[in-house]
Image (cartoon, rainbow, N blue to C red; front, side, top):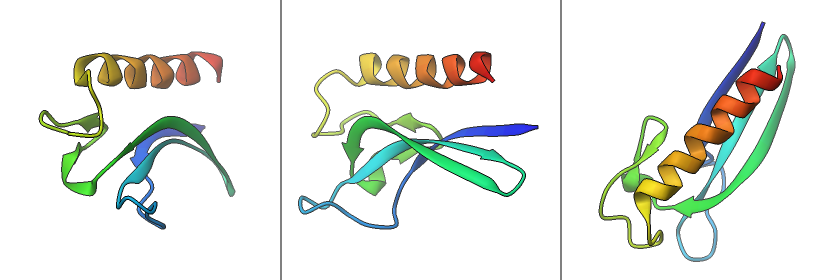
Length: 78
């Protein structure tokens, strides 16, 4: 069984203090991260969604929809 999640990768911050959002795939002992092309500060991340008021993203609703579609496509493709 494959586990698929959206995670804020807090292992290493970028120069501007933001962290990348990544799609995390795990099957048995193998893991893979796919970049979601969004970077936000840690306080604007809420369990797989971007909170309102995030200054680094212009259209938060669009970004959250895009992240949900990425997750759905990954689950469908597995």
